[in-house]
Length: 208
Image 1 (tube, rainbow, N blue to C red):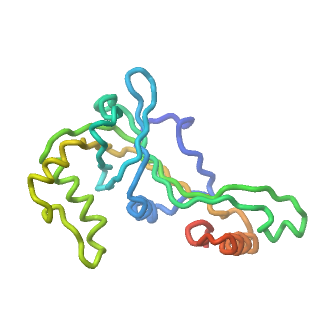
Image 2: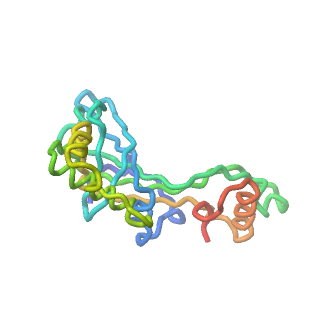
Image 3: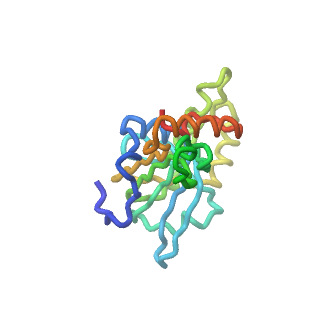
């Protein structure tokens, strides 16, 4: 695991620890991450990108025109932030508001932090393979999935040139699900009802 100092870790109270069995499915469902790295000048960079988490590797690609990839120092630390649904929680939804009024607003959310060493790949064959895997991941559930080989080879080659690959060897995984787990069943039911009344789907925003 990573030797990252505790002060740099994700704050996860014991009741907000995500079930380890849910972490990879969560990342797979989100399918995107904010990749954060720090250049040699100490200035941080961040890019939103589609990702696949395969074994201990998180892979994705950036636009070649994006200067971020040129500032990445091979083998330097990186942080990939994967987020799920989030929402404001009104204290007026809690059953305990009527009991004693000692309630305050909060925010419910889920997030996974993946840390590790980052490397940039600028190889046509590797990029074709990566784009094929990313495409298949999202197209396969469709009734008539599109495949990379459906387009002319020279057209795909042309569209691979404007992107570069990025890979993070994951050494640390931190996952948090802040979903009102510290509230009573009655309070959680009130949050679910309040979200539904506001037109939000409670699933994924309130602990069962």
